[in-house]
Length: 461
Ligand code: BES
Ligand code: ZN
Ligand code: ZN
Image 1 (cartoon, rainbow, N blue to C red):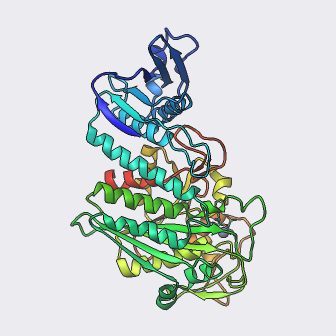
Image 2: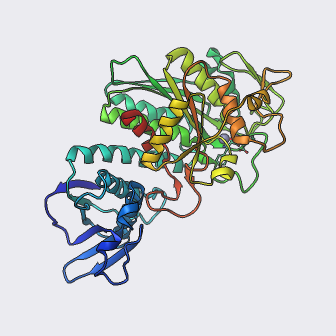
Image 3: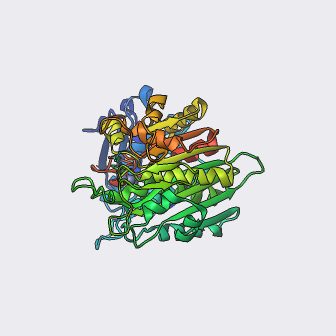
């Protein structure tokens, strides 16, 4: 899709955004927030997007209705659309939210469909927005769509090896360096937990490190993503009803790769290191067993109480290795870590855990801005205490009754491997995959949750 800025309307298919007070003359269209109306005149088709009451409008509402409007244009198989930005601008940021809605709302994963989805060829924007802003937003939103593609792709295609190859592509950009540890290096360097989780699969694990250095500043943020390319549960095999969508278990890694790609294409003036722990949690005669004890990169040993609590294991090695070798000034991990986060928040909010109030607050605010919402849960000592092992140093499940505080326990386990730096953990198991039908800018299946949030955090906060 081509997006350009224009001074006047050139196309007969148009999108316009209206507040309730502006919708008086249009029959059967009240301009409620998110409402879409279509009117045909002799020459033109006008798709109206409702923004609701002027007083209660938000960028979230505008982004959402913009996505629905472009979806209507796609349904009507339009090729060229003029989009009239609200004037005077309802909110300083409404033009941006409209562009985001258009690009995010046009996404469709149709790689495996014989009948491809219709695509809008050209969008012209009429209003007060700079082409530079449009270009930047397009890069950001296209990388969200890239992350969605990665999540939606077959687990047998997007293997750890393929993840490494995707990351390697980023070396074509300036200021990017990619390092990959394969199964032999992982063993040799002592990353015993990633090795254990990945050992049952015919596609062995990788630790992928993407360094982007765009600034002279000494600070560097690390982003660490859980990249379980398929989570069968291992010997603690997941039952039917829980296993079907487990190709989504690399969504954290997909966000990290997307963010690094966006930073590199924008050549942003920040230093960020993206770490992807990629492994296939397979069941088979070579896979690790409940009751086994493994030594992590940090030296701590871990008793395996469930091979299905594998995400915390690979994250533990990834964050330890990242801190030891790359010395980041702060670290954020993203993971589809627990089903319990879905029990808590449904698909609408991600769990936020942190050892640092300021970092937690900045992340929270970034999420409010991009409408990728976070809510913080506590990490009290009782939770960490419940992870003490007997034969090993730690256990990968708590001593609590099954299901108790499961999301917090997952976070507390990762915290055991965090040194004295600001750290946050985002549990995106609920938000990264939409099991229902599309909701405006949020498509079915892979949602790309976290890409815009982290870019907002890194570039504007
Ligand atoms: N990948 C799952 C968590 C998950 C569940 C992600 C649903 C997306 C949707 C994770 O590895 C897992 O299996 N977690 C267990 C932990 C339990 C064994 C302590 C869970 O949540 O049941
Ligand atoms: Zn699991
Ligand atoms: Zn998992």
